[in-house]
Image (cartoon, rainbow, N blue to C red):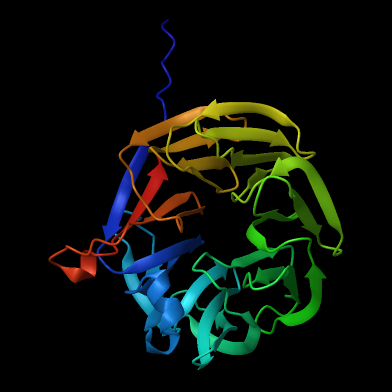
Amino acid sequence: MATKKQSKPALQKLATLARPNRMGQVVGSTLYLLETKVSDDFLAAFPDATVARIVAYELSDPSKPVRKGACDVRAAWAFAATKQALYVLLARKIDDKRSVMDLAVLDISTPHTPKLATTIEDVGAFGADSKQPVLVVSEGQLVLSTRAKASVEVFDLSAPLAPKRVASVELKGTPQAAFADDTGVLITFLGNDEPMVELAADGKLRLIKGLGGSELPARIGETIFRATGDSNNLLGVFGNDGKERSSKKLGPTSILVRVDGQHVVTLGDALSIFSADGELLARKNGVEATSQFSASGGFVLLPQRPDAKAADKSKAFAFEVWKLA
């Protein structure tokens, strides 16, 4: 009797949302999107004139996302999602010389109708550039940095709708990017000389020697993944001690790496999905997105680059939903 040949998994685009969205996260069967029509540079210069909202979409049929409720969040910069709440960083202009960032907490106990629970004012000065701030959740803690100084702020989330600031952790440099899981928060810095650090739940810092550079890391279990950032752009696979185990050639363009808890997702010349062991599962050429792309809930969420020439301006920031099929 012939053995049935196993089909190779493939990447499938499920839906395109023709609305201006910058980033998204999936919680359960709900897709939350940060909807705004402006670029990062405009937001930094004119936060009070920026209209933005967090919108909930039902994903019972992922090929046909259904727009549900929304909550206005003026000048929203980024957000992190949990099962209980959304944490949204907002830019707020104090005067012509100073802007700060506030932290809005949205209640999602009713998933399709996010609503504002509280706002914590001035969690940090607005950074001097338009890079994404650090905003991650790990084991009942929210860790954030507006990238204006060499430290991160830690908030206890025992009461998810009422975060309590419990610590300010000094670092050796200004954090560039961070990844969080149940073990802790991996933090990177500018340049190759300053090694990555891990901030544990008890507030202790652990150096991960041999892993310098500002690229966003990702981790599944005891394995760390990141782009090497050299001209060949390799996907480096490292142990939790920072020792390289293997690498995969990805392509000549800048590579972005994310994980959804089970898979590694890379974006550059192509959208590629790897197993936690580094095996290539699927690859799709010609896929584009901004650096705010994410992977969660088994979905890959790709905000498209702004198309200033689009006749229909609602499609200028179209948002794609993909899945490993």
